[in-house]
Structures are given as C-alpha cells and as structure tokens.
Amino acid sequence: MKIEDVLRLVRKNISGLAPYSTARDEYKGALGVFLDANENPFENGYNRYPDPRQQKLKEIISNIKSVPAEQIFVGNGSDEAIDLCYRIFCEPRVDNVVTISPTYGMYRVAADINDVEVREVALNSDFSLPIEQLLATCDEHTKLMFVCSPNNPSGNIYPIEQIKQLLDSFSGILVVDEAYIDFANQNSVATLLSEYKNLIVLQTLSKAYGLAALRLGLAFADESVMQLFAKVKYPYNINLAGMEQAAVLLKRDVRAEIEKLKNERERLSAELVNIPGVLHVYPSDANFILVKIENARDVYDFLIAQQIIVRDRSHVPGCEDCLRITVGTPAENERLIAVMKNRDK
Ligand SMILES: *Cc1c(COP(=O)(O)O)cnc(C)c1O
Image 1: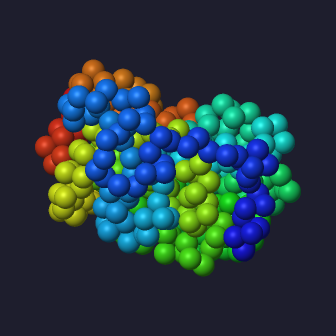
Image 2: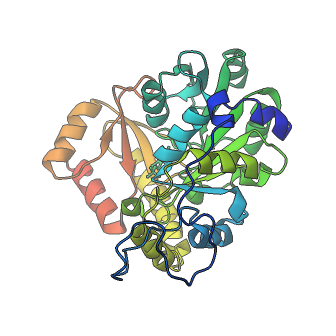
C-alpha cells in the first residue's frame, strides 16, 4: 500500500486538524529568558514544561530498537497508542475494526469508548491465525486490524510470513502488538516498516524492560503516520520525571534478565506438565504461560489462599479452564510448583 492510500484512511477531522501549538514550538534554543509559557520561573527541576516531542527519549529508544526516531511515538502506556489508532482512523458508528479472539482486552475497551464496532474472529483451536476468515470479515469500513503477537493470553507468536500475507491483502492498517516480542525466539515485524506503509507496530517498556510503573508505550510506523499521532496526542503526554527515569534505567542491559526469564519459562512449562490436573501447557513466546487445568477456578482460589496470584482466564471463550501464569523469579516459580504439587495432600 502506498502512503497516499494510508493517509486516505484518516478521518477527515484529523487530516484537517491544526494541532495545538505549544509556547516553545517556535524557539529551538536551550538558553534564553523564557517568559512565554506562564511557568513559575524559580527553578526546582520540574518548573518548566517538558519537551512535547520527547526527542531525547526517542533517541535512546531509537538506538535500542534500531528504528529511526521519526518513526517512533511514545505514549502513556500502549493504551494511549491503541486509543490514538481509533481516534485517528475510525469514524464512530461508521467504521469497524477486526481482531482475533481470545486476545488483549484493550482493543475492545478502546473501541467501545470510541463507539467503533469490533469484529472478533476466533483463533483456530491451536491459537493459530485464521487468515482467510480475518480477511473475509473485513469490508470497506474496516480501518484497522489488531493482531497481538505473541498473543496475550495464548502466548504464541505468528510467523512473519503470515503477517506479510495480511499486510498484502488487507486494505486498512494492520496493528501488530508486540508487547512480548523481547521474550520471543523470532524477530520483530518492525523490519517490515519500510516495505509496508500500512503497518503499525506496538511495543512497550512495561514488560521486558521492567518499567511498567513509568507508563511508556511505543508505536513504530511510517513517519507521516507518526506525525498524525503527534498531532492528536495530548501535547505533554509524557512527563519529565518519567523521561529522566527512563533515560537512567534504559542504560541497564536487560538481556541477562530476559534470558533468565526465558529459561524459567521452559523450566516452569516442563514442571507444570507433571502437576496433577494439568491438561495442557501451551507453548509460549512470552513471559507467561497459559495452562489448561481441571477445575481452573478452584485452583485459582486455592492459589489465592496461598497468596499466589495468577490470572483466571477460564471464562474467556477459547480459554475454558485456563489460567495464565506470569513467569516470576526462580524462587517464585519454585514456590508455585511446590504449592501446586502439594495441592491434593
Ligand atoms: C501488557 C501489554 C501491553 C502493555 O501495556 P502498557 O500500557 O504499555 O503497559 C500491551 N499489549 C499487550 C497485549 C499487553 O499484554
């Protein structure tokens, strides 16, 4: 798809939008007497408005992720990026989006808030992608398709060839949510960005980078799509304290932590198979494991009583009798296994 065709998908009120211009848009210098933004002039470290473009943070992320800074959006969690996709592309009560089921709940919440129809297509029983059905569910009002890969809560990742197949055949925008990509044994589809202008990749600093409390979600796309995000977002969506902390904490090398979690994931999966009542342990490319277990709700309650909190997904269609278990530290995983082994005793 050509970028002109992508921009034709944008809502008319957004294409024509004159963005709020911040007081400091016109002056680029760092030094000066700043009497333009009605700030308190007495310095305390946080008395000035932060950079609405987040240039320093984007440079850091650009180096880590090998994506040019102009192709990066930083949001108040991935949730902001998801919401912006709707606000930029979907006309309420006219347009629709297509997604898979089961998947991450925010695509539907954001759709409901924006009054946009969601068309869910059930994954195949092994959680693989029903490509033909996904495409057949689209019509001329389908602006977005959300595919979470690795998928939450199933944990599986979709082959890059299948993502390409969707990008080639879908005449809207494919949003691939890669919140868990750093735990996967497969590369990000961000490498497809130069070839496919109708691709938006979502990532986050909340999982592998260990910064969930800072609320820093990422989107990668063509520069002109990212300019739309910049135009529609709140001007100061990321605060200075968060950007400073991120700059410090992103200097840490998280590769060893990620390797440890991947090893623990395999160890925990192997242990869970042997727990009484476990019917299936789904393969995972994420930092959690979906487990089908007899009387899942009872097991969940039992674990709560032992002060171990997992996620009960047993009421979710396609996840009947399933618990989603996050991979913890080796000691935490040990404790989970010990408690589950002794459940019947
Ligand atoms: C955890 C998660 C996110 C990250 O959300 P943040 O708002 O960035 O913390 C995004 N997508 C999926 C599928 C997730 O599970």
